[in-house]
Length: 377
Image (cartoon, rainbow, N blue to C red):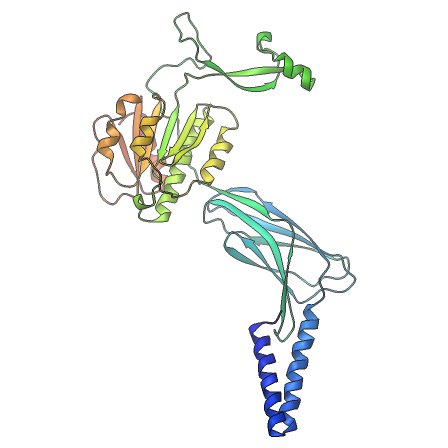
């Protein structure tokens, strides 16, 4: 297709030819024909479709916000002619990434590496690759798409934190006496049998179907749950970057509990985000779920959301300012420990009775104050 310069050249040449014909001067007509020929040659230059094979890789596929990620393109010239004059643009979300494709001989293959933007959290679609072939005078340009799009997961950043104590004693290996709470062990998943497993936990139907001895993995549902309530209403945050830090803080707390194999529950005023029971895969699941959290008006406030969840364990509420601190204190009796994290607040505030309060201007500060919250001070 013609570029704006190409359209201008074609229109100007036509007008110049008409003017020369009307005035009876051959010179304008010759110049006009030269312009029209240049436009025709430019269209013919860009008409052939390059026979290219494009394979895309993203390394790594999952990355924390701000960490480097690269796109790797393997471009092969499957045609007979030498391919040159090609420039490419790869789409990474709303960002266009310029990619230089070197000169390719027939059967030649080149690998091109380029940086992907990771400053914003989310599921970033990468691709398709758009190859642009233009003539030397930039009168015509043709864009063709190659390769299959991929997805880059830019997940929240985290810092290492310890698990908040619940304030109660729990039997991590199950009930140990006749007075232990009954009915708290529940089915979690099936896994392969290992030496030492009790035969009464074997799931015979699955074992017969798979040909491998499978056992039921049980978890103690009475383990203290870490509940995180994240304020996600747009009018509750002064800057989108403040909300990004809030998601990073939520991810850090959630990952700390998940790494200790404790249940984690994350929700906003719009509804649940994640609900894990404790296990080796919980960290990845929590980070993937928090990747998609966005600012949105929800039907509930953080206090309303906290009232709707099952009582017990630790409750961590993440907000910016302390407008609802008084209301948050009203749910204190339902949880063993209540922590409020204020992310980059606009003014100081005092903690209501029974509420542990901390201001978080950055993740390093969160890591520094977290041990104090764990000690209840």
